[in-house]
Image (cartoon, rainbow, N blue to C red; front, side):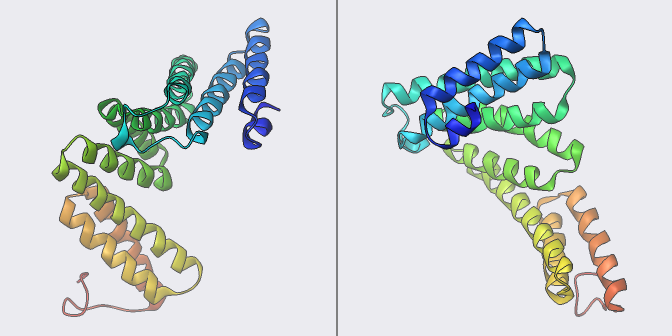
Length: 228
């Protein structure tokens, strides 16, 4: 009910339901349920804060008080959730909490805290091989570093993020049977990975290119391809 009311934009009613879920979970000593309720409360307050049409992070300090209060409540619930899922050893849930914490800190203008959270999100995404979460983390890190004025670091994260996007596009074209386009994006992924020193990305790109060459029955020469 809480999640449905959140989607409908009835945030105060959603909070009542999620709080009831939290209370019942604690009465039953249901730690998994408690963690979910804390996470859901964080999501409701985060959505409530954004629903006011909050300004961009560059306008921090110009928040209406109700926006800042809602976003800060989201941070508090995400941190409680993170503490609990860490104790439970649930790495996937930790990843989700770090990602949402980073996004909320970013909206509040706490860019250094956002970086810390997104770095942890990236680490866990890599553990699970979750490339979509990796791409989001790289982009979010780039965004935060822009507002910290660390433009070179930001550009490195955006390049790496671009490489991951090429990897995904290559996979999509492979699934569609468009192997020429898949080859193009795999080569682009390899080029970017080499440029930014992303060894993991370079290895993945090489493996993808090798697979595609087998599918196409091609043997590219050094002259017409990055791959020899």
